[in-house]
Image 1: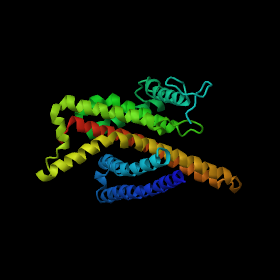
Image 2: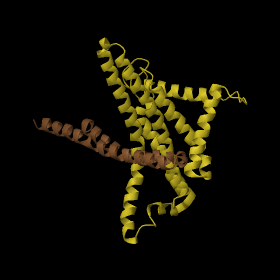
Image 3: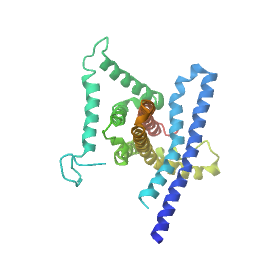
Image 4: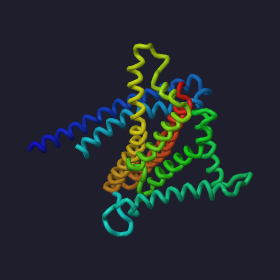
Length: 78
Length: 232
């Protein structure tokens, strides 16, 4: 019984951890959208900034990955 | 998923498994492209040679842009990382193959080697002044200790996010492809539409594989830049 409740809590927690992906989605969308907005204003400068676009996306995405990690830990390690 | 190739079901340290096989395939593919493909050194390149040259100049330019001229001496290391990650991601898209980069064990070794290289390099090149990386001069004095703590934590979290990003993207992407391929098989009566959808998904997967290899490499460059020029 007690193990079942712990199991249930772990599964609920893993599901809740997926909310973090929403935050990562907002962050990545923000970076990409602002890049596009800037690129449309000054298309000539856009190619030089793609590296920063990907770095920004990678950093925004990292926190989503941490939520994924928490979900994995709850599913398989707790 | 990891299973020995030649019988038995225990996996020891030196057991030859399918992971070993696909890593060897990756190395073989990189060698084929970069050594055999570029061997001709023709003035008008063949297809293989021009692919090899394109990758070479792409990575060279990336390092030059991110780390500056003095980062170029680390070109062999970064090129190796890019080619390995890229080919294991793309080879993993072949049906029934094994994506070696979808395992955290593999990516963690890559990320840890980058982390250790960068940290040692930072101290060797800059001495103790490498620690100024954590001391943000442009912030108000009262905030600096707090910022130093945050910077320190984010520094040590780097190998974690670096490795799990790649492994997570590969694992999740391939799981999605598998699930959707299962849907398509179940919808076999609906003729060619499921096949089209799965093909589109597959193209997206290819894009993700390439972008993740690029992101892994460019983050390596960014970390390297911190070691070369710690005070921005």
